Length: 458
Ligand code: PHE
Image 1 (cartoon, rainbow, N blue to C red):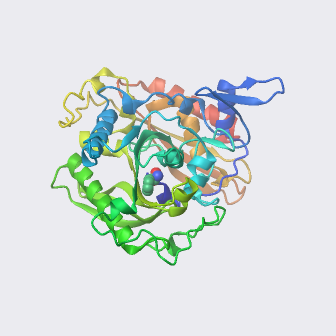
Image 2: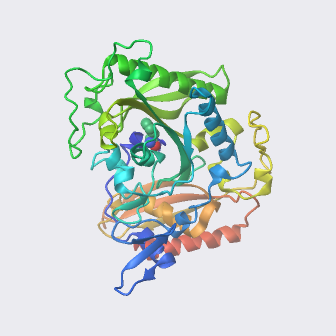
Image 3: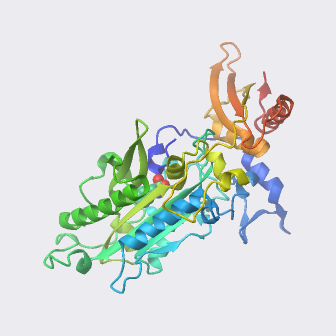
């Protein structure tokens, strides 16, 4: 799965899991039974009634407040500081003070409105699915992107800001995917006077445009119908100038991080909240890697936030991906390590010197397969979601699981039952695991699968 929200459109199938592992596990851990017998979750000082949408697990909730992006000498914190410093230097007001303000401690518990509706993400968009997000209940979730804070900050009067924090997405398990990772988002709004300082005759908005607020309930067109040139309300001059400024700044950031000789390219893309939209890719170890998504903000979003006379750009990027490249960190789980052998390798004393990671040592992997029959009439993605299984594995085994893949599935021609086989690779990051230890964890995963999904181990 790619990190950027809209790129994950194809693989997700509809989920109608009968037994939702996650909700029952979450209930067990932090359920409070109130006088009227309602189940509640207490998260970050807020109390939330659980419902049929609840799928956040106790294991996932342990990541709240860890703030790896603020931890001294942590590679994510070093990358955060590099990005912030770059923006402080790139934009200054007349007195020489930084124009951008930074928000890096916002509560990751957000509403469906903040994460999706405010950003014009269509009501049937795949990124809203239960199989892709950690819902606390029907109205609340752990933010799936830091863009979720855009509208509240703009409504509060801000026009140049960065948001940094961890985001939560249900996903597969391998060396580059972890259900919690970090993003930085930014917004810059400019008025006509600023944008056209040197060309005072030019306008931000088309003369023919009436300025009326678009119906927020309108179902949005899909990428095929989005005009990549501009939104109808904007003038071409305004969009081109903004695009130029944004791309200049983002290429500058990329060169600041990866060096002046880095090879890059811009690729047209689609996000529900920007139009036109682009991705910036860099050439690294024989591959084009996407490093950020950006675009000209949809004017409806600004209108809903009470801003009528500005045009804006926005971008979002993932910190782990940058840090893995810059520090040569081979496994995304290392960002959660408390091992001093990991953290002591990095030092924010000298932010410009990005030391390469040296593996403390290489502990052996242990690979075990787990095959089971799904209950009658249940199939992969129809009643059984691999993401539910991955959450079970995380809840039971924690971070010693390095990778899981669905290696085989088939339907028995006579009984019609479906069988699946998952390959689970175990590796501890700080020591060698014994086979007996691995077998016990594997057995616990099998038992929990029987319990949660009503499967039959083969
Ligand atoms: N929120 C987007 C993501 O997570 C990134 C993005 C932010 C794109 C802002 C455009 C503007 O994929």
